[in-house]
Image 1 (cartoon, helix red, strand yellow):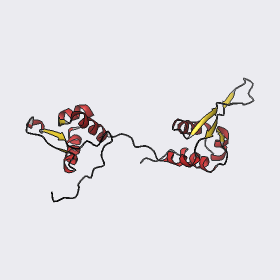
Image 2: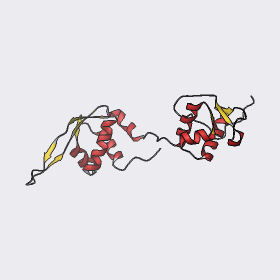
Image 3: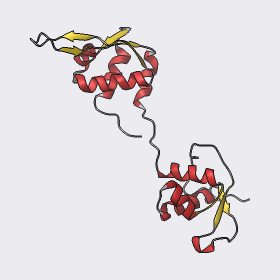
Image 4: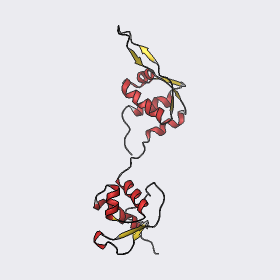
Length: 174
């Protein structure tokens, strides 16, 4: 799991402890000490993820001769208890996710096909196939294309999410 950005954590903590039902950008900046631009990005992300609801895209007159107005949107806190979940970032897809997707598409495959579909190096594909073999998710399927390392067959298809595999599973007496 990756670390959240510095502005994110203080804002989430403020939103969970604040007793108000609606929050403005300036109140958030004042209470957390975070700059408006950074706070606005965090608040927009929380809105996009469904933790906040944008009520008003308010503006404040700054007193300049040109009549410049600053943004001061107002949000409604939807569910205060669920906001800390936002700190746990979603995992980014990595190369093994792409390899798993390519293997699921092909069902019977060789290394070259998976390399092309997943845009991965030969050693990476081979290592992941070996892990799948050790965890009984894939097996060798004949001698076709022996020069390319042969063909494999997907045995267990657990769906689109890459299965949690052990690099070296414990030996069983089958």
